[in-house]
Structure formats: structure tokens, C-alpha cells
Length: 495
Image (cartoon, rainbow, N blue to C red; front, top):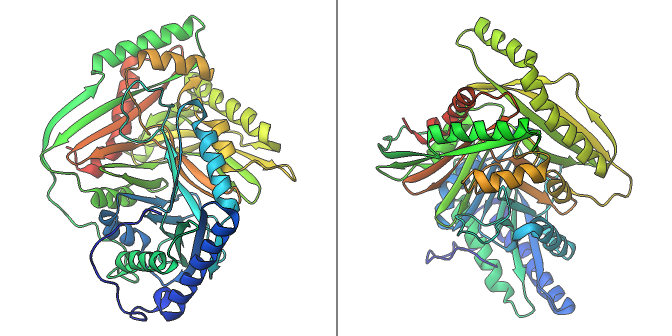
């Protein structure tokens, strides 16, 4: 069990109402003791997970206030079911590396979840899974040992403190988790968990949202495009030439804007601006040691709920218009473009076939709809499948099956990824990877980590990419990346 440790004394028993009153402390201790007994019986570590209803609060306020007290935290505000997840501290890591990184994480989570000892009172009906969650994500591509990555290749973890909520101000559940060994001290572990909960929850407004306070915007010290604009456009020409030669059907080419500011970026402020300015997106933030990966994605990779699998094809982009008339004209161009329709169809075909490998039946939305975001609009197609009775596939199986889709890498997958590895010259890190959560029943949500940035102090790497087909125009594709970079630029206060 990894918990943040400080020297603040615990409040006296019963000092806080609700989940941390005398009865709550007693229930938490009983759950921890039962897990230690199970660990002695099984001769292996056992996860203890204790839950209690949490009074009305804004989970994002908890995250904003408490994230600095732990080297790892996670925030998830879902656009798809309005669920909120906050995770602080670490009860257990689930890691993988290389080509089998997803399988390693999936197997580790299955072992951990199978022996969990639960206690307390869970809150029914919340949209964000059941019981303890494994949260985190996967980099776009496996680490083959060529360089030191800023974020892990693959990392899910069970948080020490977890909050699930049905939207802002809705019903919420507090859950405290710890991994126990045969010789763990139950009183010490229960005290540490109680301390973490008190420290994280104390002083958070009961019914208000986190205010986005106006703060001085840090000046920009330097801006570097990786690769440079003309070099990137030349890569577009080389890629489309390779497509015309039959090397692959579609390629997604990314670029990075690396900005150094005069002061550290304000992460809670950036998250607040993302929440306010990007309706219809899922906002996420992952703190890992000195780095924060955050974004507002309009695209989910896959969701699994009660045996139903949801995937989304989001490919084909047009700008928004300055007037309703101009916006409608741009939408007509988007829908009527043969180039964009082809790019979109490649993605949808792959999703349909991949979901069909795990499901008894698959439904594909027709015709595509148009998703309108703050500064761009996309073609969108929903793909839905129903797991066969008795099927043991879960959310992590589907993530492995689907990632990366042609909307992230290209098609055919292997040929496109090989070309990117040899020519893109960019470590995407978790950009275009998969970020989300899984529960022990195989339910979960993973979003495609686009419209995102990786921040370390006063340095931020912003990422954007474009889907290329044979007749893609380098100037138009570059302009598209500029539009896609704008939400994160605005959130971080980059002029």
C-alpha cells in the first residue's frame, strides 16, 4: 500500500460526521482486519475495499485541493453518463511494458479483483462502475526501450481513496482501499486510510463547484513545433505518396507544440477552463510524480456497461463557422466530402469488425452524425455490440482489441504503425493512447486521449494529429492541427 504521509495528527474519533464517524472507523478497521486474515489464509496480498455514502460535494473540488498531497491522482468527468471519478494515492499498481503490456495489466487486475475483501455500505445506481476501480491508461505505442519515457508505458492502479459520483452535486460514494500482507498492522493501515480521507475531504465546499479564479497568465518564454511546420507538411506529402503507392489506406500523423512559460502552469485552473469551455467532452487529468497529463476528449475508445459494448468512430474534421449560416455550410462540406467520408469509413469498418469479434451482434449507426465542438466539428458513428451470454470479455479485453483504431494510427494497423515509428520522429507518450477506468465486473470507460497536453512545471507539450488519405492537402491538414491545439492552448493560458 502506498499512501501519502505527513505529520498532521489525526482528528479525534468522531470529530467528523458521516463516513468518518465512530461507526465508520470501526467498519473500516473490521474490513482491514478481515483482509489481513484472508492474506494469511491465501499466503498472498489481498485488497481491502471499504465504502460509505458521501454527502453532497463537488469531487473536482476534492481533487483540486488534495492532489498536491500525493504523487499520483486521477480525475475523470464523463460526457457519456455524467459520472465523476476522483482517485488519490495508491493501494496497488498494475503495470505492463512492451507488446504485451495490456495483457499484463489485465491479468494483474483480474488477480487483484478476484480476492478483494469488501466492507461498508456501497452506493447503488452510480454510473461509474461498481466497487474498487482500476484507473489510469496506456501510452499510444509500447515502449521498446529506445528512450526514457515521461509517463509509464502502461499503468492502471487501485487508488487508496476513490470517489464516484453521479454528476456534480449528485449521490456520491467514498471508497478506501489498501493492499494487505499477512503481517500488516490493521490499526496502522486503517489509521492511515482515515487520515487520508480526513485530509482530502476537510474544508471542501458541500454544495458548490470549484470556482475558476482569474489568475495571472504566465508569459510564454519559448514555443517550439516538433517537427517544424514545413518539415511536418513535407511528412504529409511523403505519407500521402506512400498511400497512393499502396503502402496503406490511411495514416494519422501527429505533431507536438512544446511551450515553456515564465511560471508553472495552473493545473486546477486549466481543468476548470476545460470543463467550462468544452461541453460534450470528457475531461481527464492524471498526475504522476512531476507530470500531469490532461485533456478534454470528444471521443471514447470503448465503454462496457451491463453486457453492452459501445465504440465510437470519430474521424473527419471541419472548422466551426462564425455565423449559423457559415457553420451549416461547413457542415454540408464535411458531410459531402468524398475524402472525409472515405477517411471516416475506414475507421468505422475496423470498429465494426473488431467489436464483432467479441460480441454476438453488432449495430452500426447510419448515416454518420455531426458532432459540434467549440472550434471544430466531426463526423461521428456509434458502434454498439452485445456480449454473448457467458462471454468473459471485459473492458480491458476490448481496449486491447481496439487500440489503436484507424482514427489514431492508421489502416492497415501494422503497416501504418511501422511507418510512424520510422518517420514521425515523435514520442506521443499518452497522447492518442487510452485513458479511463475498469471495475471488477469488466465494466468501464476508456477515452481516446486527444485534445490533450503533458505538463511538467512551466513546460507543456500539446499534441494534435490528422487523418491522411491519398488526396490530403498539407496546408489544410496543418490548419486542422492548429484548430485542434486551440482548446488546450486556451485552457493553459497560452497566447
